[in-house]
Length: 323
View (cartoon, rainbow, N blue to C red):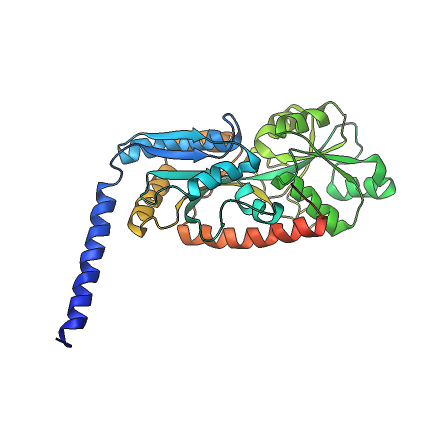
């Protein structure tokens, strides 16, 4: 009997593996809900709807977007964290997923334990802009002006705790300049304030800002990506402008509730790997100002860890508090 125990254990493991594989082959058995923790029409919602369409085609079952906005994304993320771990509930997150742990005293999810990463599907860098009347064409020229009269200059951002807002805070902490952050209620109002020259400087995500840069209503100073954006490749990166360690972007990540089987996660990631090569997907996503990433579950998990730690430090250094 003692000799049989290892064999019995091996057979049980094989049976369990076979059961998981069969479950993945059958998945999905009904429509899949894709939670978006923001209102309809925003960047994450737009990307999620493109992803949902492609997953519907690939999985053979309808993938339905469910907008659950509120509390900086915490409501939707908390809802997804408590969903059954059978692959039929997924969530598309933005960078608030990695920012909120350091920004709020309490959140309804654990960024490391509540979810299984599937892929960071796409990401968009932020961009610093100025009104064309500002006599600065580079970041060094701009900061020289700010140094001379910091109280005169303000930076418009989409809201407290957004990655553009934190990118401005990171620059502020790094350069030790005392310019004022002006958080608006979204990217649209923030961009509009700089276009109208109500605020001299802007730091916003690329998608809502690019048309104004191309039309000459704003001057692009520097993007916060590791490389230049294909949509405005004439604008240098912060590193090229002489300011290293300022990288930030707005991720668009796909996750499943913790406990979702590896087989189902692998099947979903395979669909992501397939969709990002489709010409219509690339055209749509890149046209919105996003770079296609399509990272592996392991790479996305590593990114989450790095970014949670990074933005928590920035929030603490800047003294940002959200009730």
